[in-house]
Length: 248
Image (cartoon, rainbow, N blue to C red):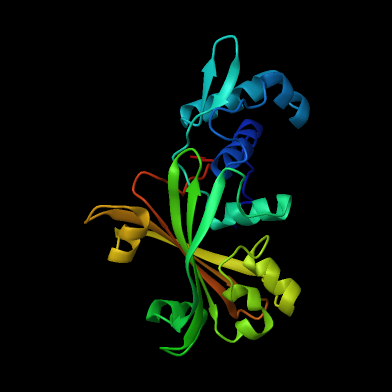
């Protein structure tokens, strides 16, 4: 019989929580992170456990200690994944941190590329809504080129999808409010490949350049695809990291 998975040790849970805040931009480079004493009180753990959490972040290169001053966030060279952005929106009501800016080079209805129509369960060549964004950090520059795709029919019930501006929260949250279309789960995939010409132009990359590509498809309770997202990250950024217990 399969065994029930064990949860991570408490210090790794604390470190993971702080790491998510750093990657999302809620804790900016140069900001001080909570001290051992503050973490111990907030998480109701012993100070050595809190200290191990900070040590784990130091080993990951996310924070640095300054003698007599405290522990401070380093530039993470990381980009939040869609899952982390969804969690941020649920907690704080916004997908992006105050440290990030978003521009929309293209928003409109186009003939869907095959990989997009396949992901959305549409016939080849179907018309789709394309929302393309470039996300920048005030401290580290370009973070990602992100494109969200929806069926063209959604424009009738969710017109903000065709506006080159943030909808507030997430597009999935907007669809739930505007059209009663509610997401139930998402599936993601990641791969590395060479950037195409448009991606190189948007991210300021030389030819050739390898990029990390992250696909996420959101579904409703009937397993119908609602949204397909494609995020493209430049080579110097990582976007996939997970801690998990090992038992041998």
